[in-house]
Length: 137
Image 1 (cartoon, rainbow, N blue to C red):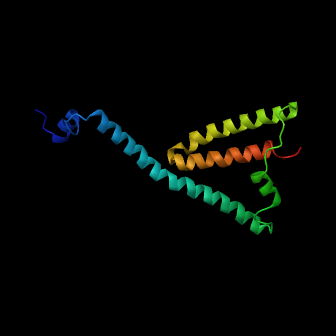
Image 2 (image 1 turned 180 degrees about the vertical axis):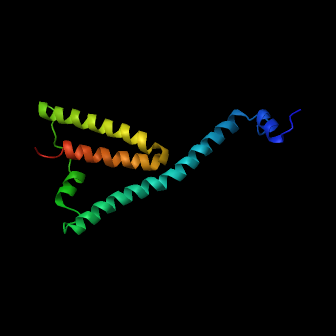
Image 3 (image 1 turned 45 degrees about the vertical axis):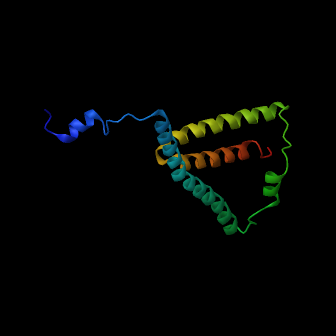
């Protein structure tokens, strides 16, 4: 016989009863719901922090917090045409740069949770697209 009670309990499992498939799926849903409940506030906090950081930077540089360009980017429909070869090249560059940045961010930030990772990916991809596609030049 095994002298250590914990070791024998580990070999048997924590409980010997068989769970039904419905109970097993309910446990799975509860685990996912708990994960979402813990990561959602982090995601919203990181997004709020990013927006406030832009506001603070504009305030310190004596710029208006919301500019006409911001309203045009948010409210007007896109006027970009993909027919020109230069625009296609810009689009390919932004896709490649965003994919590379997302890959690196996934490797670095995935241990910190989905909220921080998704907020960082969203902010990085938006800044890459804004820098490559929406700037004139």
